[in-house]
Amino acid sequence: MIKDHVRTNTYRDAIFHHQSLIEGKVVVDVGCGTGILSIFCAQAGAKRVYAVDASDIAVQANEVVKANNLSDKVIVLHGRVEDVEIDEEVDVIISEWMGYMLLYESMLGSVITARDRWLKHGGLILPSNATLYMAPVTHPDRYRESIEFWRNVYGIDMSAMLPLAKQCAFEEPSVETISGENVLTWPHVVKHVDCYTITIDELESVTTTYKFRSMMRAPFHGFAFWFDVEFGGPSASPINPQAPVLPTAPSNNSPMDGSQRKKRTNPNEALVLSTAPEDPPTHWQQTLIYFYDPIDVEQDQLIEGSATLTQSKENRRFMNINLRYSSGGRSFVKESVMR
Image (cartoon, rainbow, N blue to C red; front, side, top):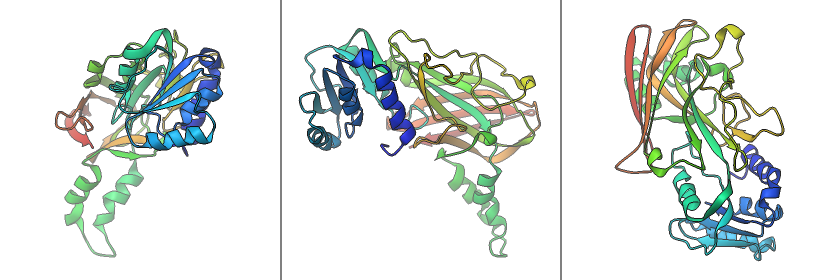
């Protein structure tokens, strides 16, 4: 993840953008990993940084801190946020908590715990907000490579393999990189997260209903999910949700609702780390849920339904995904598990 320059540079920029709120303050880094964000905070003038990680990487993080002569400022705590003790309130919480599809295997629950245990009133949380998006996509190349390939394999008809090929390729969500050209419509907000107010209970299940109108005639292969996070100040409001993110389109294809978000265009607005298809790629990429068979849609054809994301009761690391979608008078259900 350190090699993810978009991710690491945005976090560093956010830390120094908020240097006036970090300098001379007490910081906790939730899930510190190698300790790089803790070190950035120390370089920004933090009085003290508690770097917390439950995994054995905390041992290496401590060595990294020593190698950079920051042991007097950065205190590495090897343990769960729920268990470690910090005997003071903190001014700042920083964490790279986001998982694939924002919420899969995320550490947001630990950030909430740290906030409720230690953050001073009026303190700073970085990132401050996050938003999960979804949109219908077309991806003929992916379908051709995974499925159509079997119709003629070195001159041999292997069509009998098609049902198994579809199951193997599309049964579970796929983490991969697509482009803005694959996206059929304006995106829809599945979930907005305000890190100052969200509760752990809200993470157990997320449901949204959506309506899309296709911007082009194309095979509709499934849905893509991506997210962005914002690094606003303590009283920062989310970026205006009225303006669109993706894709670029003529004015007659304006969004159907107010769920879209805009990019940061003014230095005074919150820094944004985006994993959208049209932005520079990150290690999160996008999460694709493909149908076993595509649906042909016409320009302006309505696509509507609901999406529910639920933590698995058998294994809280897993996410159950239920997609209900209708278009052209036909209705479908796709259930999958992200594991």
